[in-house]
Image (cartoon, rainbow, N blue to C red; front, side):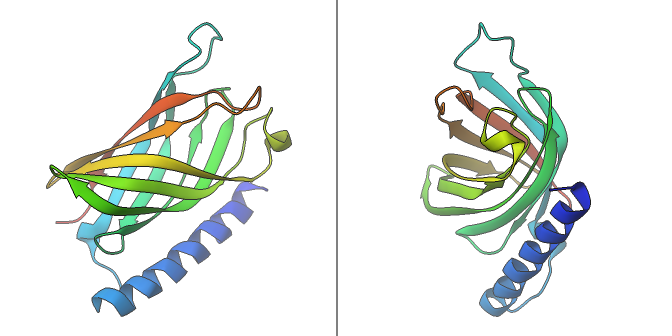
Amino acid sequence: MRLASFNRVAWACMALLCGAAQADEGTFFEAKRLWLNAGFYSAHFDTDKGLRNANPGLGFEYRLNNDWSATAGRFINSDSVHSSYVGAYYQPWTVSGVKLGVVGGAFNGYPKAFDGGWFPAVLPVASWEGERFGLNVALVPPLKDRLYGAVSFQLKVRLGE
């Protein structure tokens, strides 16, 4: 899928999810719910494979309500190939200020997984969100010889006040 196609899919998903947020919260868009991230840092389990740990990119996350967020972005993956993602966080539990749940969505760009095409994934995730900065931590399990396992860290900054 080309970048233009990805952008259309990502914006359509965001529009649908934001429409759901409007019905749930009574407001279509609030800047304080929007987060920006610059990609990921992946601490790989297979440290001897020469994988790229720093995965720079650009992504957005929009907090729909206390449990749900929509997310989309693009980054350079562990195989040094561009990847895109679109999905949603569901985090119904909070322990000591840390939200717990899963992030599910679709990813592409991994040459050994589905020939670089789109594939679904659901990952366990923990998030901490402060007034201005936040952190998402996801566990990426290995998938045979297709995807490499890692603990992935994603710093984010709130764009609105």
